[in-house]
Image (tube, rainbow, N blue to C red; front, side, top):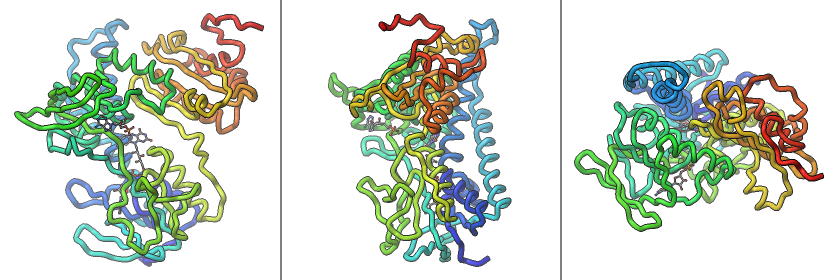
Length: 480
Ligand code: FAD
Ligand code: AMP
């Protein structure tokens, strides 16, 4: 094997592995360095955070726990009688691990099929696009490339009041591995990861308390949608305490004692397990030699321009290790853009059209601007909403909760924001993404024929509501 490549990618998460495959498809000679190793210490594991300890295992547990929740609390009212369903946690974990194994193994096959060279070890960027790789035995070897793409992702943030304590205080990775359902579970942080993991264990029977320092629930989400979702989460028994800043923890007699400050002063609560989900930080540890030419920004992310170019010529960086939302599909889009640019094309990522999803029940999904953002920017806009309570398919699915909200420019009618909370919001939001990518107006959606009965009819109705009014709810008559 020659040690010179057109492109060396460091990291095989959804940023790095997608860039590697696409680069090879474009005819480039690509290597991908990844140091993730199987539990037995023998094999390289591809797929990064997303496939191993992120998107995929969390969604596996969310799907299973949702079915369990339905069997416990949703079946009876639909006439399905099951006696005392119980959860076999070991079997559930086995299934989750099986899905992960299948997908990570699939990437290894795709690398083979596309001629990508996997290099097992820890990569470090030297000057002049040289990459030094240290394997598990400490041996190093240096490779060269015309271009290097850094895709090293992110790690969970630890906070001093809640240091990781094996078996008791865990991060998101540990929360995907519990061997039994904790009776009382604490979660620090009501962000996406905290809410998803809190939901999993609440559905399986834990009493879940979420402690969130901020006084606004999901501040990045349109507040009408966030408030609607919060109502549902509370109904499900998630005890979400806002304005509750965790100040300390201790583990005694197999319990985690958590102290936090809220409006009433210092409080204390005991849990069997505590999940710390306070965000993630870019992974740049021991990655850049002093003369690599790559700089970090003021928040510790690798500094890049709109095209993911770093300050060092021929060195690019993508995904969680650079600015922007920490999302798998954002990482992948950047990976594709970068290798296409290396191959001489001129693509761009449209950062205004990246969907966000929280996979709770109801799901919360959005693309574009919130009403709060538009107000702050002084933009004139109009809004149309439609509740799933008036959608026949949602009723049939026993999931008539939430709403679709479309925000359009007051004058041009162009869609500026598309927000959903409700059943399958993660799928429905794609309609908003496509509409916005095509520069659609709300009227374009209103003039489109949607199949009946579908959840997507709520999109049609919300678009109608931006104009003259939805059909299937009573509208207040507009003055002419
Ligand atoms: P990563 O996936 O973190 O991959 C980076 C890779 O680089 C890793 O494999 C790492 O081992 C490797 N690496 C790092 N340093 C080196 C080095 N020096 N040498 C060699 N290899 C190195 N996002 C979504 O879009 N949807 C979701 O539903 C979702 N759910 C999530 C749930 C959880 C619990 C978590 C934790 C995250 C979730 N995310 C989700 C976020 C998503 O996982 C990340 O945004 C995504 O993985 C980022 O991709 P990446 O390629 O930038 O980095
Ligand atoms: P995200 O970054 O979206 O995953 O969300 C993490 C959340 O954790 C943010 O909303 C933070 O406000 C919250 N958070 C951070 N530190 C603390 C703390 N000490 N106590 C409670 N919440 C916190």
